[in-house]
Length: 175
Image (cartoon, rainbow, N blue to C red; front, side, top):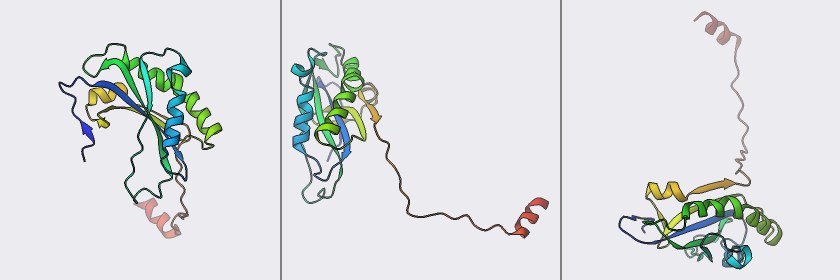
């Protein structure tokens, strides 16, 4: 399966995907994608730079992801006029506005008050035909990330330092 697309000579519209990662026993949930997309609707935010929000389709392989608990809620934003080959309508600054100005408060409020699952991480990246874009120039323009709650590593093992003997200390002093 191809995971990225080459954009040379393509006149595709600018599409970015907002992903908000959290822990939830339901796994990926279309309902959460729909509700979050509604919060970014133009009617809810007013005229905000030519972007339209759509819920991302939830795609899960059968029987493989049934135990996924750290999952994203995803919303796609499509620019009304800009393409990757032509930046009419300032899509780069629009993505920064979405990610830094609108998304943090909307996301945090939705996750904490509505689904009662705190958001851990949020990222946004460019897509073309539903696939991630590998072009470094495009990636640099449209990729952003933010941690609400950093992931923790919990070790159930205590590492005990080795014992130092008097002879070892004396040997090291004279070497």
